[in-house]
Length: 125
Image 1 (cartoon, rainbow, N blue to C red):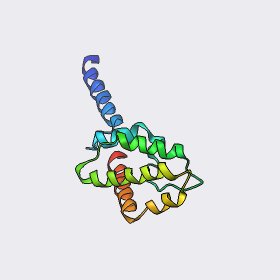
Image 2 (image 1 turned 90 degrees about the vertical axis):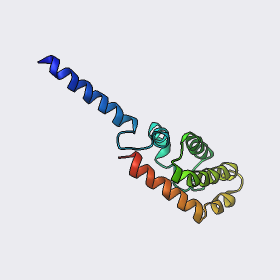
Image 3 (image 1 turned 180 degrees about the vertical axis):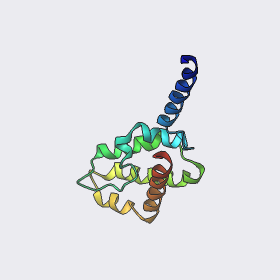
């Protein structure tokens, strides 16, 4: 009887490993993997930065996380737009907050929303 249970247990353990890796629902591991590995940073990764609330360290952490993310073909432009925003923010958050605020334009907002929707709709399933 134990011989019959062993394959079932191994199958269940294998399925658990796939679920934990972020690949079980068809999510793109290259996009989802880094975000799932760093849930603290990814929780706010696609939110606009707020002067006085976010620090240079926050921006640096988000930008480093975005460098690890591999975009899906449909999100490539959005990811580049978002990384551009984070780059401007990293250069201006301490010295020129106005530049950081104006960098968050409609294109950046749309890119952040698209990335967030994919993250919550695909990676977090």
